[in-house]
Length: 283
Image (cartoon, rainbow, N blue to C red; front, side, top):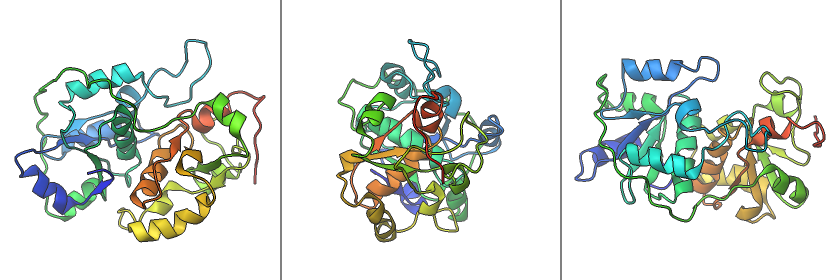
């Protein structure tokens, strides 16, 4: 319950005396209502829906007026209150899923770990794996059973801000989870400038997956990822992408592979590229 859970393991857990809170995180960056519509058509029994923009992100502009990226983190206190409304408390198992190979579920996983919640996993293969295993779905929206805000615990997941990353460039390993053409600066459909953070290495998040949408084995992930972070302690490995979402997929993959808990740069390229004074690289 710290990284991935299979459909069969989830089915067993749902029949246990302590069934999990299920979080449906399906989303589409192009059609931001698609995931919620899919949830309304069918979802895992008892699942609550989380929308990337409304529930898993905070205000795009900081108090200082600076852009914080396209999907900045919410205040921890606001997220703690939201977790309580979802019925999540210390020790309550939580499983997140989506339909895109896990990037949005990984964001929810990371954010709960950020609160200090350990008992959370991503459904390996998402709703497709659940259906393939014969799992039931429903259309009913569960009645809320809210709890108080999640208690203030020490954050379990480290983060770095733009100024901190700029100061440490050359002394940290940066992994970029975007598609190769965006990393190389050939196209940029979402942010103001194409390219990548100087010194970053490329690891497209979908490379963590098998053709069926499930994660590669821990051993295979370790073989592929270890060379990218060789010589860097986990606390010196910074995960980024376009807006801090798919970076969580790489972070999850490294942790599942036994390579430790790495650092998230929440603002990612959308925040970095917003200031023309910051260095960029292409190629």
